[in-house]
Length: 212
Ligand SMILES: Cc1cc2nc3c(=O)[nH]c(=O)nc-3n(C[C@H](O)[C@H](O)[C@H](O)COP(=O)(O)OP(=O)(O)OC[C@H]3O[C@@H](n4cnc5c(N)ncnc54)[C@H](O)[C@@H]3O)c2cc1C
Ligand code: FES
Image (cartoon, rainbow, N blue to C red; front, top):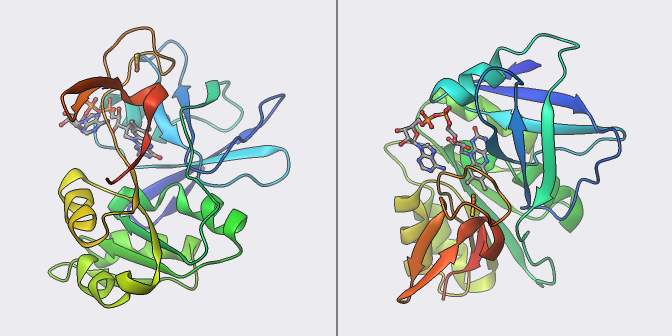
């Protein structure tokens, strides 16, 4: 466990779990405290899984407070990851939306990255992607993106308004969406969202969806 700016990096022993495709997620729980929460895989060094946490509520705060050596419930990998068969990748992250990109960047051979944060303290997380171009509010990540979008295949993760703005600029982008998830594998319908009039379970039909 270590602080990364305003976030917390939780590193767990991998055991028999596979890290999966970048953009997939795991359900992570501090047993006996609260139900599991969905977490993107951030880093996959040998023998470990790394998750970047933002303590926004009871579940994520409980995970930020686990003690070294404490046993966790980790289930995954789940959902659809990013398609990596892109010629000119550009990673675009907002806030905790940086989480899946260190693992994505490793898989894609360090492509260009744009990151946006709401404060300098949050922006310290860019240390996880040392070559990234970083903006801090009031500048939004879509400003530099507008200059680069023509020549790139965009993979984006961040808050919903950012994803909508990215989608408007880059209609072929791959976007990582969020919804509250109770099970993570299609059983509870808690993550249902309506897309083009069709109900989708984001945990199995996503979380990565084509912007179109
Ligand atoms: C596929 C996926 C991957 C994720 N990866 C990460 C990650 O790598 N790191 C990380 O810190 N968080 C990640 N999240 C978000 C995280 O799982 C939620 O923020 C978490 O459920 C919050 O739980 P909580 O008990 O701490 O807060 P809660 O009390 O459940 O929520 C706190 C606030 O966040 C809102 N909220 C809760 N869950 C969501 C959600 N999924 N989308 C939008 N708003 C929500 C609530 O309405 C409330 O306002 C991911 C979510 C998904 C679906
Ligand atoms: S989280 Fe249960 S169906 Fe998606």
